[in-house]
Image (tube, rainbow, N blue to C red; front, side, top):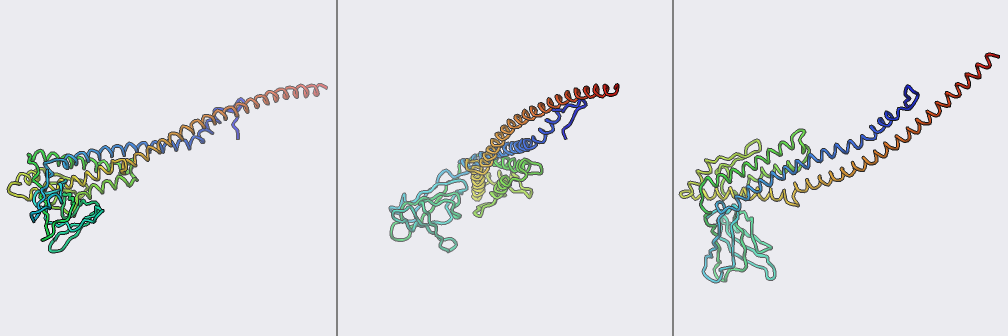
Length: 357
Protein backbone atom coordinates (compact mmCIF):
# COMPACT_ATOMS: atom_id res chain seq x y z
CA UNK A 1 0.00 0.00 0.00
CA UNK A 2 1.08 3.59 -0.66
CA UNK A 3 1.94 5.38 2.54
CA UNK A 4 -0.10 8.49 3.45
CA UNK A 5 1.22 11.17 5.78
CA UNK A 6 -0.73 12.82 8.62
CA UNK A 7 -1.53 15.60 6.15
CA UNK A 8 -3.11 12.95 3.89
CA UNK A 9 -0.26 13.37 1.42
CA UNK A 10 2.18 10.74 0.03
CA UNK A 11 5.66 10.74 1.68
CA UNK A 12 7.48 10.87 -1.66
CA UNK A 13 10.99 10.84 -0.20
CA UNK A 14 10.38 7.78 2.00
CA UNK A 15 8.74 5.79 -0.78
CA UNK A 16 11.48 6.56 -3.31
CA UNK A 17 14.21 5.81 -0.74
CA UNK A 18 12.71 2.40 0.06
CA UNK A 19 12.42 1.45 -3.61
CA UNK A 20 15.95 2.64 -4.35
CA UNK A 21 17.31 0.65 -1.40
CA UNK A 22 16.03 -2.53 -3.02
CA UNK A 23 17.15 -1.54 -6.52
CA UNK A 24 20.64 -0.68 -5.21
CA UNK A 25 21.28 -4.16 -3.81
CA UNK A 26 22.67 -5.43 -7.13
CA UNK A 27 24.91 -2.40 -7.44
CA UNK A 28 26.16 -3.00 -3.89
CA UNK A 29 27.02 -6.60 -4.82
CA UNK A 30 29.06 -5.36 -7.78
CA UNK A 31 30.89 -2.90 -5.52
CA UNK A 32 31.67 -5.74 -3.10
CA UNK A 33 32.94 -7.91 -5.97
CA UNK A 34 35.15 -5.08 -7.22
CA UNK A 35 36.54 -4.55 -3.72
CA UNK A 36 37.45 -8.25 -3.49
CA UNK A 37 39.08 -8.15 -6.92
CA UNK A 38 41.05 -5.04 -5.94
CA UNK A 39 42.40 -6.88 -2.90
CA UNK A 40 43.37 -9.87 -5.04
CA UNK A 41 45.12 -7.70 -7.61
CA UNK A 42 47.12 -6.05 -4.82
CA UNK A 43 47.94 -9.46 -3.31
CA UNK A 44 49.18 -10.89 -6.62
CA UNK A 45 51.20 -7.75 -7.32
CA UNK A 46 52.83 -8.11 -3.90
CA UNK A 47 53.56 -11.77 -4.61
CA UNK A 48 54.93 -10.86 -8.03
CA UNK A 49 57.30 -8.35 -6.42
CA UNK A 50 58.38 -10.94 -3.86
CA UNK A 51 59.06 -13.51 -6.59
CA UNK A 52 61.07 -10.92 -8.50
CA UNK A 53 63.25 -10.56 -5.39
CA UNK A 54 63.72 -14.36 -5.36
CA UNK A 55 64.73 -14.33 -9.03
CA UNK A 56 67.18 -11.50 -8.39
CA UNK A 57 68.78 -13.27 -5.41
CA UNK A 58 69.07 -16.50 -7.42
CA UNK A 59 70.50 -14.69 -10.45
CA UNK A 60 73.19 -13.17 -8.23
CA UNK A 61 74.42 -16.73 -7.68
CA UNK A 62 73.89 -18.21 -11.15
CA UNK A 63 75.76 -15.33 -12.81
CA UNK A 64 78.60 -15.31 -10.30
CA UNK A 65 82.01 -16.62 -11.28
CA UNK A 66 82.39 -17.53 -7.61
CA UNK A 67 79.72 -20.22 -7.98
CA UNK A 68 79.95 -21.13 -11.67
CA UNK A 69 83.10 -22.34 -13.49
CA UNK A 70 84.20 -19.61 -15.85
CA UNK A 71 85.08 -21.91 -18.77
CA UNK A 72 85.14 -25.51 -19.96
CA UNK A 73 88.07 -27.28 -21.59
CA UNK A 74 87.34 -29.87 -24.33
CA UNK A 75 89.89 -32.68 -24.63
CA UNK A 76 89.92 -35.43 -27.30
CA UNK A 77 91.41 -38.85 -26.61
CA UNK A 78 93.10 -39.02 -30.03
CA UNK A 79 95.11 -36.31 -31.72
CA UNK A 80 93.82 -35.30 -35.13
CA UNK A 81 91.41 -32.96 -36.83
CA UNK A 82 88.65 -33.26 -34.27
CA UNK A 83 89.34 -29.89 -32.63
CA UNK A 84 86.32 -27.66 -32.91
CA UNK A 85 83.87 -30.48 -33.53
CA UNK A 86 82.74 -30.26 -29.91
CA UNK A 87 82.36 -27.15 -27.77
CA UNK A 88 80.90 -26.73 -24.33
CA UNK A 89 80.28 -24.12 -21.67
CA UNK A 90 79.43 -24.23 -17.99
CA UNK A 91 76.22 -23.04 -16.37
CA UNK A 92 75.01 -23.03 -12.79
CA UNK A 93 75.50 -26.45 -11.25
CA UNK A 94 78.65 -27.39 -13.15
CA UNK A 95 81.34 -28.80 -10.91
CA UNK A 96 85.06 -28.30 -11.33
CA UNK A 97 86.92 -31.33 -12.64
CA UNK A 98 86.45 -33.80 -15.45
CA UNK A 99 82.94 -34.64 -16.57
CA UNK A 100 82.11 -38.13 -15.26
CA UNK A 101 81.63 -39.84 -18.64
CA UNK A 102 83.81 -39.26 -21.73
CA UNK A 103 81.53 -39.50 -24.77
CA UNK A 104 81.69 -40.04 -28.52
CA UNK A 105 79.77 -38.24 -31.27
CA UNK A 106 78.31 -41.10 -33.28
CA UNK A 107 76.15 -39.38 -35.90
CA UNK A 108 75.02 -36.14 -37.44
CA UNK A 109 72.16 -36.40 -39.92
CA UNK A 110 73.05 -34.70 -43.25
CA UNK A 111 70.95 -31.62 -43.90
CA UNK A 112 69.58 -31.78 -40.37
CA UNK A 113 70.88 -30.54 -37.03
CA UNK A 114 70.08 -33.91 -35.44
CA UNK A 115 73.07 -35.42 -33.65
CA UNK A 116 73.75 -38.38 -31.36
CA UNK A 117 76.32 -38.93 -28.63
CA UNK A 118 76.96 -42.04 -26.59
CA UNK A 119 79.01 -43.08 -23.58
CA UNK A 120 79.42 -45.89 -21.09
CA UNK A 121 77.90 -45.46 -17.65
CA UNK A 122 78.59 -48.29 -15.23
CA UNK A 123 79.39 -50.49 -18.26
CA UNK A 124 76.02 -49.70 -19.84
CA UNK A 125 75.87 -47.84 -23.17
CA UNK A 126 73.88 -44.61 -22.91
CA UNK A 127 72.71 -42.77 -26.03
CA UNK A 128 71.33 -39.23 -26.34
CA UNK A 129 69.96 -37.62 -29.52
CA UNK A 130 69.44 -33.92 -29.98
CA UNK A 131 67.42 -32.21 -32.69
CA UNK A 132 69.39 -29.00 -32.37
CA UNK A 133 72.99 -30.21 -32.28
CA UNK A 134 73.03 -28.97 -28.70
CA UNK A 135 72.77 -31.12 -25.59
CA UNK A 136 71.80 -29.55 -22.29
CA UNK A 137 70.20 -30.61 -19.02
CA UNK A 138 71.68 -34.10 -19.38
CA UNK A 139 71.51 -35.91 -16.07
CA UNK A 140 75.08 -37.20 -16.40
CA UNK A 141 76.53 -33.79 -17.38
CA UNK A 142 74.99 -31.39 -14.85
CA UNK A 143 75.59 -27.72 -15.55
CA UNK A 144 77.11 -28.35 -18.99
CA UNK A 145 75.81 -27.40 -22.42
CA UNK A 146 77.44 -29.36 -25.26
CA UNK A 147 77.38 -28.46 -28.96
CA UNK A 148 78.64 -30.87 -31.67
CA UNK A 149 79.34 -30.10 -35.31
CA UNK A 150 80.96 -33.22 -36.72
CA UNK A 151 81.62 -36.94 -36.31
CA UNK A 152 84.94 -37.98 -34.88
CA UNK A 153 87.68 -39.07 -37.29
CA UNK A 154 87.69 -42.65 -38.52
CA UNK A 155 89.81 -45.12 -36.67
CA UNK A 156 89.67 -45.93 -32.99
CA UNK A 157 86.68 -44.24 -31.30
CA UNK A 158 87.67 -40.78 -30.17
CA UNK A 159 86.18 -39.88 -26.81
CA UNK A 160 85.66 -36.35 -25.58
CA UNK A 161 86.23 -35.22 -22.01
CA UNK A 162 84.85 -31.94 -20.66
CA UNK A 163 86.62 -30.21 -17.80
CA UNK A 164 84.89 -27.29 -16.06
CA UNK A 165 87.45 -25.00 -14.50
CA UNK A 166 87.60 -24.11 -10.83
CA UNK A 167 85.27 -21.17 -9.99
CA UNK A 168 86.87 -17.85 -9.15
CA UNK A 169 88.13 -17.78 -5.58
CA UNK A 170 86.47 -15.55 -3.04
CA UNK A 171 86.07 -15.12 0.67
CA UNK A 172 83.44 -17.41 2.16
CA UNK A 173 81.74 -14.32 3.61
CA UNK A 174 80.86 -13.06 0.12
CA UNK A 175 79.38 -16.38 -0.92
CA UNK A 176 77.63 -16.85 2.40
CA UNK A 177 75.89 -13.49 1.90
CA UNK A 178 74.64 -14.55 -1.53
CA UNK A 179 73.29 -17.88 -0.22
CA UNK A 180 71.70 -16.17 2.78
CA UNK A 181 70.01 -13.59 0.54
CA UNK A 182 68.47 -16.37 -1.54
CA UNK A 183 67.19 -18.25 1.51
CA UNK A 184 65.77 -15.03 2.98
CA UNK A 185 64.01 -14.13 -0.27
CA UNK A 186 62.56 -17.65 -0.52
CA UNK A 187 61.28 -17.59 3.06
CA UNK A 188 59.75 -14.14 2.59
CA UNK A 189 57.82 -15.37 -0.44
CA UNK A 190 56.73 -18.65 1.17
CA UNK A 191 55.54 -16.80 4.28
CA UNK A 192 53.69 -14.25 2.15
CA UNK A 193 51.84 -17.06 0.37
CA UNK A 194 50.88 -18.61 3.72
CA UNK A 195 49.36 -15.29 4.80
CA UNK A 196 47.59 -14.69 1.49
CA UNK A 197 46.06 -18.18 1.39
CA UNK A 198 45.14 -18.38 5.08
CA UNK A 199 41.54 -18.10 6.30
CA UNK A 200 40.20 -14.67 5.28
CA UNK A 201 43.31 -14.05 3.20
CA UNK A 202 42.86 -12.25 -0.12
CA UNK A 203 43.82 -15.42 -2.02
CA UNK A 204 42.27 -17.94 0.38
CA UNK A 205 40.64 -20.03 -2.35
CA UNK A 206 43.22 -19.51 -5.12
CA UNK A 207 45.24 -22.41 -6.53
CA UNK A 208 48.07 -20.45 -8.19
CA UNK A 209 49.92 -19.19 -5.07
CA UNK A 210 49.80 -22.66 -3.56
CA UNK A 211 51.26 -24.10 -6.76
CA UNK A 212 54.02 -21.48 -6.69
CA UNK A 213 54.83 -22.44 -3.11
CA UNK A 214 54.99 -26.15 -3.96
CA UNK A 215 57.22 -25.48 -6.97
CA UNK A 216 59.68 -23.49 -4.85
CA UNK A 217 59.81 -26.22 -2.22
CA UNK A 218 60.28 -28.95 -4.85
CA UNK A 219 63.22 -27.00 -6.29
CA UNK A 220 65.16 -28.28 -3.28
CA UNK A 221 65.27 -31.76 -4.76
CA UNK A 222 67.24 -32.81 -7.81
CA UNK A 223 67.70 -36.33 -9.08
CA UNK A 224 71.16 -35.34 -10.35
CA UNK A 225 72.39 -34.09 -7.00
CA UNK A 226 76.17 -34.09 -6.78
CA UNK A 227 76.13 -33.10 -3.14
CA UNK A 228 73.37 -32.59 -0.63
CA UNK A 229 72.22 -29.02 -0.06
CA UNK A 230 72.53 -29.75 3.64
CA UNK A 231 76.29 -30.04 3.06
CA UNK A 232 76.12 -26.38 2.07
CA UNK A 233 74.03 -25.48 5.12
CA UNK A 234 70.71 -25.16 3.28
CA UNK A 235 67.88 -27.33 4.54
CA UNK A 236 64.13 -27.56 4.00
CA UNK A 237 62.16 -27.64 7.24
CA UNK A 238 59.03 -29.64 8.02
CA UNK A 239 56.94 -26.44 8.09
CA UNK A 240 57.79 -25.49 4.52
CA UNK A 241 60.61 -22.99 4.92
CA UNK A 242 64.38 -22.95 4.49
CA UNK A 243 67.20 -22.61 6.98
CA UNK A 244 70.79 -21.67 6.25
CA UNK A 245 73.76 -22.54 8.45
CA UNK A 246 76.50 -20.11 7.55
CA UNK A 247 79.17 -22.01 9.47
CA UNK A 248 78.46 -25.23 7.54
CA UNK A 249 78.87 -23.49 4.21
CA UNK A 250 81.98 -21.59 5.30
CA UNK A 251 83.63 -24.76 6.59
CA UNK A 252 82.93 -26.57 3.30
CA UNK A 253 84.21 -23.69 1.20
CA UNK A 254 87.30 -22.99 3.30
CA UNK A 255 88.34 -26.65 3.03
CA UNK A 256 88.31 -26.67 -0.77
CA UNK A 257 92.11 -26.81 -1.03
CA UNK A 258 92.21 -30.17 0.77
CA UNK A 259 88.72 -31.40 -0.10
CA UNK A 260 87.84 -31.24 -3.80
CA UNK A 261 84.33 -32.37 -2.85
CA UNK A 262 83.73 -28.80 -1.61
CA UNK A 263 83.41 -27.72 -5.24
CA UNK A 264 80.54 -30.17 -5.56
CA UNK A 265 78.84 -28.34 -2.71
CA UNK A 266 79.37 -24.98 -4.41
CA UNK A 267 78.01 -26.42 -7.65
CA UNK A 268 74.96 -27.81 -5.86
CA UNK A 269 74.11 -24.37 -4.41
CA UNK A 270 74.42 -22.89 -7.89
CA UNK A 271 72.23 -25.62 -9.38
CA UNK A 272 69.61 -25.00 -6.68
CA UNK A 273 69.74 -21.27 -7.45
CA UNK A 274 69.33 -22.02 -11.16
CA UNK A 275 66.21 -24.11 -10.53
CA UNK A 276 64.74 -21.39 -8.32
CA UNK A 277 65.61 -18.67 -10.81
CA UNK A 278 63.94 -20.58 -13.63
CA UNK A 279 60.73 -21.01 -11.61
CA UNK A 280 60.62 -17.41 -10.39
CA UNK A 281 61.43 -15.90 -13.77
CA UNK A 282 58.80 -18.03 -15.47
CA UNK A 283 56.14 -17.09 -12.90
CA UNK A 284 56.63 -13.31 -13.30
CA UNK A 285 57.11 -13.31 -17.09
CA UNK A 286 54.38 -11.93 -19.36
CA UNK A 287 53.25 -15.51 -20.00
CA UNK A 288 53.70 -16.58 -16.38
CA UNK A 289 51.09 -17.59 -13.82
CA UNK A 290 51.40 -14.51 -11.60
CA UNK A 291 51.32 -12.04 -14.49
CA UNK A 292 48.27 -13.81 -15.89
CA UNK A 293 46.48 -13.68 -12.54
CA UNK A 294 47.13 -9.95 -12.17
CA UNK A 295 46.11 -9.28 -15.76
CA UNK A 296 42.88 -11.29 -15.61
CA UNK A 297 41.81 -9.63 -12.36
CA UNK A 298 42.61 -6.16 -13.64
CA UNK A 299 40.35 -6.94 -16.60
CA UNK A 300 37.59 -7.98 -14.20
CA UNK A 301 38.07 -4.80 -12.15
CA UNK A 302 37.76 -2.69 -15.30
CA UNK A 303 34.60 -4.58 -16.29
CA UNK A 304 33.09 -4.22 -12.82
CA UNK A 305 34.00 -0.53 -12.70
CA UNK A 306 32.18 0.06 -15.98
CA UNK A 307 29.16 -1.93 -14.83
CA UNK A 308 29.03 0.00 -11.57
CA UNK A 309 29.25 3.29 -13.48
CA UNK A 310 26.49 2.22 -15.87
CA UNK A 311 24.31 1.03 -13.01
CA UNK A 312 24.88 4.24 -11.04
CA UNK A 313 23.67 6.20 -14.06
CA UNK A 314 20.65 3.91 -14.42
CA UNK A 315 19.83 4.17 -10.71
CA UNK A 316 20.06 7.95 -10.81
CA UNK A 317 17.65 7.99 -13.74
CA UNK A 318 15.40 5.53 -11.91
CA UNK A 319 15.38 7.72 -8.82
CA UNK A 320 14.51 10.80 -10.86
CA UNK A 321 11.72 8.89 -12.61
CA UNK A 322 10.27 7.63 -9.32
CA UNK A 323 10.49 11.07 -7.76
CA UNK A 324 8.59 12.59 -10.68
CA UNK A 325 5.98 9.80 -10.63
CA UNK A 326 5.24 10.00 -6.92
CA UNK A 327 5.41 13.78 -6.91
CA UNK A 328 2.77 13.85 -9.64
CA UNK A 329 0.74 11.28 -7.72
CA UNK A 330 1.09 13.46 -4.64
CA UNK A 331 -0.17 16.47 -6.63
CA UNK A 332 -3.19 14.50 -7.83
CA UNK A 333 -3.99 13.46 -4.28
CA UNK A 334 -3.68 17.09 -3.21
CA UNK A 335 -6.12 18.03 -5.98
CA UNK A 336 -8.50 15.27 -4.90
CA UNK A 337 -8.18 16.45 -1.34
CA UNK A 338 -9.21 19.96 -2.38
CA UNK A 339 -12.19 18.59 -4.29
CA UNK A 340 -13.08 16.48 -1.26
CA UNK A 341 -13.02 19.59 0.94
CA UNK A 342 -15.20 21.50 -1.56
CA UNK A 343 -17.69 18.68 -1.84
CA UNK A 344 -17.77 18.23 1.91
CA UNK A 345 -18.47 21.95 2.37
CA UNK A 346 -21.18 21.90 -0.29
CA UNK A 347 -22.74 18.84 1.29
CA UNK A 348 -22.73 20.45 4.69
CA UNK A 349 -24.47 23.56 3.32
CA UNK A 350 -27.04 21.41 1.51
CA UNK A 351 -27.74 19.31 4.61
CA UNK A 352 -28.04 22.43 6.77
CA UNK A 353 -30.53 23.95 4.31
CA UNK A 354 -32.62 20.78 4.34
CA UNK A 355 -32.64 20.74 8.13
CA UNK A 356 -34.02 24.32 8.35
CA UNK A 357 -36.87 23.47 6.09
